[in-house]
Length: 342
Ligand SMILES: [Zn+2]
Image (cartoon, rainbow, N blue to C red):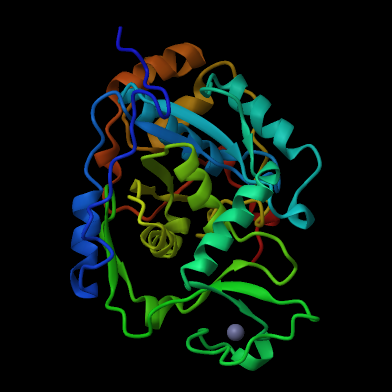
């Protein structure tokens, strides 16, 4: 039996190429790709990181299952992190529903659950480090001032500290496109100056941004492989910029397609996707595997979740999703036509 790796023990973080930060910007993406080599066998650390804004639905089961299978197929760890950083958007009981539903499907995580709400001091420390490096700055710009434009070279004067203000990550206005090699979607590029601008890392209402918290937690937990929905792919370059600022190596990314309703809308909590019910028969997991283009045997679908998972771990082929951005959810997990927003 292959022993699972433990964070910080058998899975030392890979050293960043020493030339990364001094590399000319045009060559930076290639340096990043070189730095992001495949982890050693047995040293895979992945995760599932849902926000408790509603119950688990079929779309989030797909992200959980794909990240779980990718980790287990590599004899790796699979961690669970609840991203509860936005209390106004959270739904009472959602965290409990997510955990109990994952358990009901046999998606058992390693170690204890991490809650981002308990990580305030770490985020504050990270922000201070970025400010000391000169890449984080306070910003009092209002939406009205920005008029829908990217924030770039604004804030020539420090904000009035007696008013609410945000913190932004400073982007080089002369930077070349930043690219990464996604395991499923290929080479993905965005221009920090033209597509991103100085982005918020602490909000005006003092809540931490997803971008900063996710990098600090992934780094702290030793995550080196991220499998998540393609709806988050445009966040990746922001996170790579934060990794660069800290001189940290970034994880490798695989962005899976999103499941859609009959009208093409993404299945999401915002779009009132149907809550997922526990299904011990194995059929729901089988449908998820089928959606992930794993071609599970028909006879497997009523053999129970443990059998389905065992087959899926052994036969996991993520390349079946190469280049795919969206696929319709099985009809039983779509809302009825009357429930769809136009
Ligand atoms: Zn500003």
